[in-house]
Length: 195
Picture 1 (cartoon, rainbow, N blue to C red):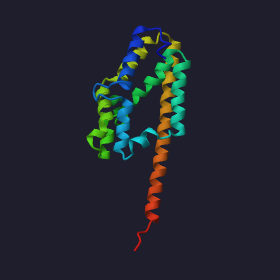
Picture 2: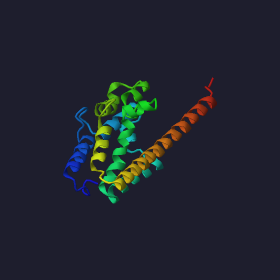
Picture 3: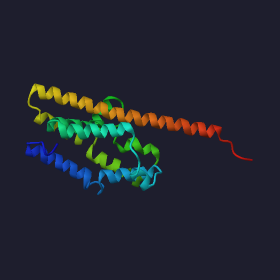
């Protein structure tokens, strides 16, 4: 996507964004992958279990979707698909639906985890305050580089498609969590302590 982008300013924005994600987030001095591994450890998995986890089919499909669109379509469409995900972290937009942004620490605090396991969400809150943040920056960039009615229609279509792919992945996660919870409940009801 960056290699296909002819606009230096847009390339600089994407590279700086990627640096924070993949090299060093100044809020937590870790990568976002590293902070997510830490979150997994807080949920009771070993580091090896987190790193060796086999992604679900919906997750694999989503990753392939974003990889494909960012490599094969014009840079603006790839950019729209990837940055659309920042809308899930937009405080003002979430509030319109009576929700808390997905990446907000407030969403994860009810789990009662030690603060060291919530560092990813701390970084997310710094990057995406209730107003402004990555979501607003990326929308401003899309508006700035979308120059025709046809581009506007295409970008909006890609944003909608990408959000629906994201929803498909999270629906799959939810279904697996519900099924796992039911199994635990059944196992507890069937298990009888020995005398």
